[in-house]
Length: 158
Image (tube, rainbow, N blue to C red; front, side, top):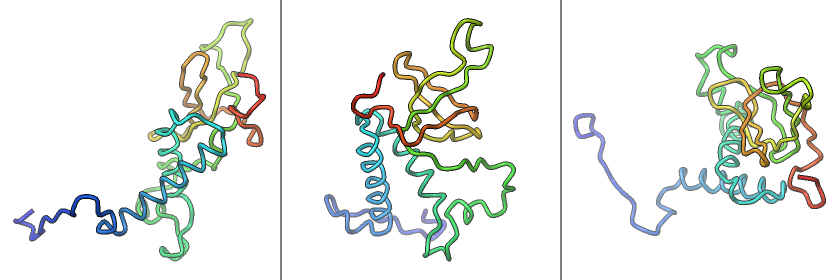
C-alpha cells in the first residue's frame, strides 16, 4: 500500500459510525434481508440466500445518487447486456414450480416440483429454487412463479 501512497487506517472497535458509507450500505442490506424473511415467513436459516437476493435487487434498482441509473449499469457499462444476466425481480420466498426436464424425472413422476424461490444465480441466467423435502437446490430459468403465495405461509402444505 505504501508504494501506491495509500495510508492504511483502521477504525476504533465498536464505532460503526466511523465506517460511513460502508456501514450505511450494510444496514440497508440487513433491512432488506430482515424484511424479506419476515414477509415470506421464512426461517432465519435462509439468511444467506436472502442476502444474495437482496444484493441482487439493490444492485438493479435505480438510485437518485447515480442519476437514476442502477449500480449494475454503472459498474458494467462496458460489458454487453447479452453477457450479463438481468433477470426480472420476483418475490423472495414465494412458491416456484420448477419444471423437471426429462433427465430429472421418470415418465410417471410430476413434471414440476413445488419449491421456494430463494434468489438469483450468480454465474448463470437462472433463478435459484430450493426444494426443502429433498434438500435440493435447482438453478433454472424454467420456473412458474406464484408470487402471491408464500411457501412458508401459515396453512400452506409443505
